[in-house]
Image (cartoon, rainbow, N blue to C red; front, side, top):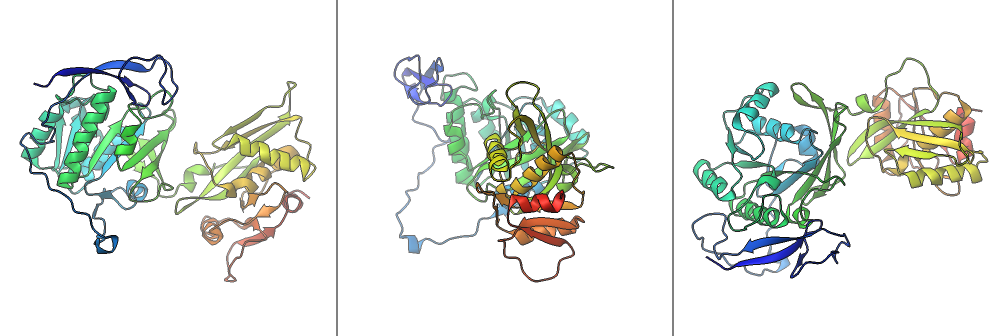
Amino acid sequence: MAKVKTSFFCQNCGTQYAKWLGQCKACNEWNTIVEEVIQKEEKRNWKQASAVKKTNKALKINDIVLDEEDRISTRNKELDRVLGGGLVKGSMTLLGGEPGIGKSTLLLQIALVIPKKVLYVSGEESQSQIKMRAERLQTKNTNCLILTETNTQHIFKVIEEVQPEVLVIDSIQTLHTEYIEASPGSISQIRETTAELIKFAKETATPVLLIGHITKDGNIAGPKILEHMVDVVLQFEGDRNHTYRILRANKNRFGSTAELGIYEMQNIGLREVENPSEILISQKEDDLSGTAIAATLEGMRPLMIEVQALVSTAVYGTPQRSATGYDLKRLNMLLAVLEKRAGFRLGAKDVFLNIAGGIKVDDPAIDLAVISAILSSNEDEAIPQDFCFAAEIGLAGEIRAINRIEQRILEAEKLGFNKIFVSKFNKISSKPYAIRIVQVAKVEDIYANLFA
């Protein structure tokens, strides 16, 4: 047996030190460095038996044969869209999210419908608990195998016996390897167990799905290198008090990180929401002031979202500015544009902004809807429900052109809107549309069209 050595690791960023320090020099956090016992052995293969190591040769870039990525469909359109078309063979996918948000439910649901032999490894629940959840999902799959184990060496023995085509680990923080003398969830254990799983995935071309816990700051627990080691990092977002969940890709080596998947949590599992506009636009009987509909894009998917604003006289000396789902600095910029360029006196008023549906939007094309909702609330005059907006606002008060305008127009047309306001500088094809397109150049023009 190799000599036992002690080392010090930062629990926040994973940086290793030879001795204890009060502050980590890498991330500048205090009291995060802890001592861990590490034990190195020569045999570090994911298999117990030694394998013959193949040496790779250097090739000219023109001599490299580019093969199309072989993907496995998960039978879940939302997840496939976020992944870029399905699971790539030999890939490592990390799914993080708040406790109780539905991470285990999502992956168990995938394991029960995917047309491959799946090994679902759980270190948090017993087999009977997983069976109860599977019965609630009302989906049966004879190819799904359940294993409750936390030791990676025992897991790999079972893998050699059953030869799964997809591996699911719930969760990476519960695993431990015999090569490291540290508690499960520590920096050393997470790094080592992930390295073993990556070696297994690459050597056998088996896609591996990992569930990761997150910290109180919303980051995935463990060293930051964990996110660098895996191929795909997915974030499962939402409020446990609401039914809708949003799946985003923070990192994706095989596709775009701009795609978005939306689910609805029901008593029989997660339902895919194919038309997100049904949840992002409130259903109301009467016209209400302070609301405007924006045509935005998440990746290749067009969405119609509702922007809600409330403008009221400031009760306290300093006016309040609050934004939910929208950048607060950009809101302050738009208010300054309205004050300086258009002459609206909003400096002494409270302004509250909310993006309906609980999503966060970074698309600057919703600027026009934001100022329309603010003006609507300020004037206490409702915008007709069949109006929508798609344009960016510049610092000079000009309404700027945006990309993929025709895709936004077609989405608004499909959902039954009668009028869409866009920038005068957008080039729109001359083909006939069922929706009326109004082109405006300045903030004053939008005010004249809506409230004059």
